[in-house]
Image (cartoon, rainbow, N blue to C red; front, side, top):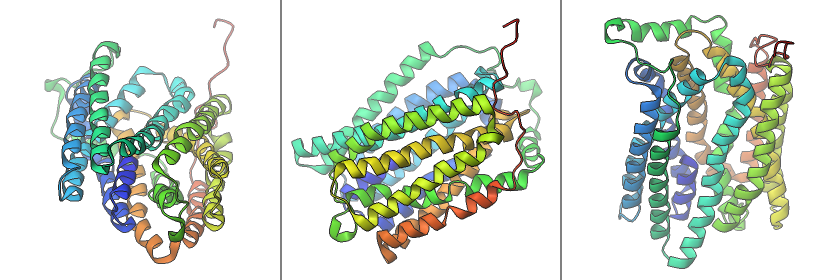
Length: 402
């Protein structure tokens, strides 16, 4: 949703500095969601949380549609997006918990590529399909605010339908239950956090969570503005429809290939054996943005090829990150502990993203993407200090009984 908001605010002529600063604040609910993640374990089932919050997301998105045409749209839209972010973060807690309960550990690792791909497909659908549709609606209506209002109405309807579907389709798990009132103790909430920070090797693990996506965090908020900005401003001058096609077609294929391949290879060889190859494949394609900024190619094929390389690398390399978070979350309170991991992940995205727009405004796209390439170094350093069990993530061979 933040990626979609970036494109919308760019179309509405908000500056890069304001876009990156204020949309990065939308990550804060994911940063602090561990503070209320135990509540999802203690009250209600994950299934009920998922369905109820999908209806709430539909209402929030409909409200965004009403704020976009306002005269002070930036302030009002951000306020609703802020509430939307809290709702979405809580939904994320419940979904992660349901995933961890529904599948055995070896299945979790095997399907993480599919899960990561589905997550990224949602992002690509926003960056691709919805951005393309916004461009088409703008051409039809001639009104950018009306076009984006219609987009959010469409999204609101989608989430309401998703809530209805999952009310019927999600399985009821015996393990998916709230803690009995008689079993709740005042100190349970704090014990969940204490148990997480008492895990062996937690210091290097947290450094890895914070630094693995540093380069991506710097670039993430500026990719769409870079592609949409005029060539005179250092961008590539794409239209919304072109941006939508690049992400919605080429990006989907590359992302699917990278994510599914990453999950398959980890399930076959284990995380420890694949960790360094995945780190390299994820970070090396970042140099393509530097090349695009320096050369400013006019060919949509060349731009698509560069973005395909980046999307493949991201889909492949980010799988290792997700599996490592599952490793950290293993044990009691896995739902809450996984939420804490994703909170640190979000913090690693939020802080660099807040300053990325100001940096780019000061030095331009070429120098900015040069700094992004340099920012890959801390992730390699952090990876050198973590420990991974040799068999974690690897699917055991079938026995004769199987």
